[in-house]
Length: 513
Image (tube, rainbow, N blue to C red; front, top):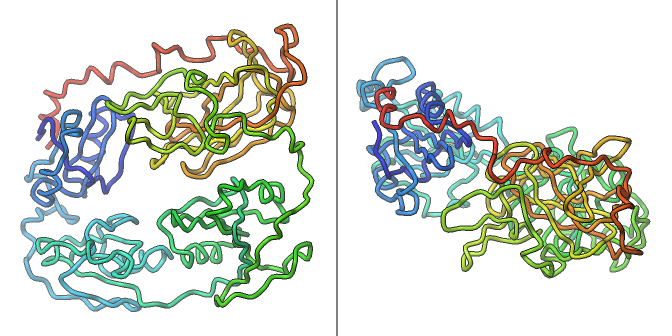
């Protein structure tokens, strides 16, 4: 059953899927017994699967804003096919069932819940299995359990962290019990704590958000491969690394000043700490040792400091490069907001006054989409930095660089005789810096997308003035391979399969049970 220009906003508990045909979205919902409805936005080909429908979440259905209504259609399974796990209709479930025993290690508050706090997922499980899922995940502090539906909703919050605003309404509380872990902290080992420091771009084991420091310590302490982590208290974000100062000293020393102010670095103590630094002074915390680094350090850098200056793209350099210096292969259309290439500035945030997204985003996820920057005149390029989209998870996992003097003839940046593929971002928040081993001399630079969640970029370029202007005959400066223009998609062809777009929404209703 379809309702056009409607949505059940914020109820995509079963996931969001991009670049999906409507046919595939229907199949996803039909194949999942938990799915009761979904929202579909044809212009973005995006699919939002929900555990709820209009009956179970009327306020969210009625609360769909005009901005979303005009681009979204709502699809709901017919009640005749909504089944329980045993294949029988949920309507036959008895209204009152005997209360099971409280699982070990948990306290229970009956007829209450933390509504909308199922950050770790919703599952159809027995109460015993639900408790086991929560116990196995160090992030999990509590869960809601609906006995009549055997539905389990895991949360990173408890009553203290969620606050009174998260307590659910009577329609949910009458069928739900709330279970909270009793405090029993694991032995996570000792950490050396260095204030205002980070190990930049080394979050190989992942980034986690809305985490307490204790949870982040627990993650690293329980992972044999984790040697350190950065913790950004203002974002409650945790970035786990397989490196430490000994194995990635350059990454530790290159932590930029703007990031140091909000980040603390924690290193797992496996052996006595290195003696190259002043001895730490003990803090009052039970598990950490804290010291502040000296105000000046002398470290050997792979590049001269005089040629590592940001060249005017991002916040650190004052956004000096004009908007006209940015262009791209394509731009994602976001209605009233702009996701244009002029937004691709490192640490730029969403601008609500000018309706500018905090990044450039391409219109497709194809390899070869690119962001192009005109540096104004010939520069010596020694490094680049990338970020994903502000407040969203879209980011580029790997990319290539191409460079040019005249914006017509392009060359791949090469290392070892092959085009170099740079490691990009593991998340949208952390800025990852890559040094260019063989510095380039160029005016124009392209970031060419490879692996991506969705191509959204914020960038900075580092370098200095070139010793001399570079004529076209001096290319390639890096023994680069000439790139034919056909390598990159034109603005008119973004790789979509038009066969999906002709699917008739009017006929889909018959296919939804």
